[in-house]
Image 1: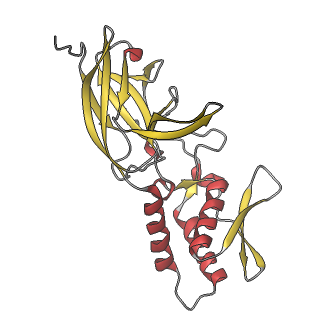
Image 2: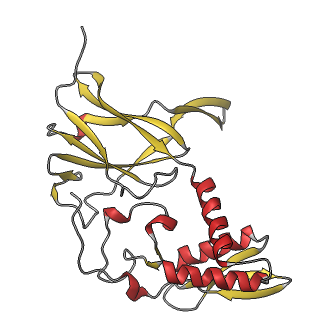
Image 3: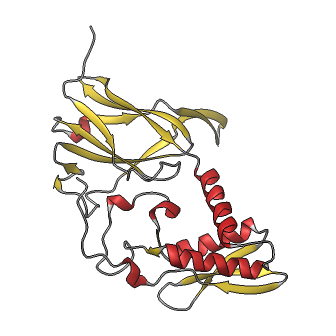
Length: 254
């Protein structure tokens, strides 16, 4: 007997249209359904992988999913929630991350009796985050620097670029908001904090063949990047002022 899902399902990716989807970054999916029980359906991608493990009995292999669900309950300020478990009008929000890039077959399965039945599916293109970041770094260097500059001058140009093009992460300030529209990779969402800024400067330093590290500024958990150039340390604070991230109005996406 062919078992079919009892309820209807439609799937929609909620990440902003101008942002790509990357591995190790959140993908938010609206599961539109008339199913009143959020525990009676689950996600499946058919992308399990063989993993080598070892215990006191020796080496063995097992399969693990290459994606995971992120449990953030009713977290987004630009979403009208209608109940617990990320319930929204007409369904639920679900958040996932994938370990690897590629085309993913994302499926919702519903439990009917003792059987899990495929109820809806979409294909999701996950881009390579490391490759995309490298391309972005190289593009910025090509835009703001040239071969006549010293490495310190190049990093100062990069610092200026970050300060001009990024705002402070509005999730990390008093009275902050956490918006679904901001979900994504830092170079696309354009909101960062001092930890992100330090990472960014160290990433550009690496592209220039230099070593960088975080340095604690001594107040409010603030950090900046210290880059070693020809045996000498140079400091670069590329963190935008916190006021740039203050948000008092926003549009609801759902």
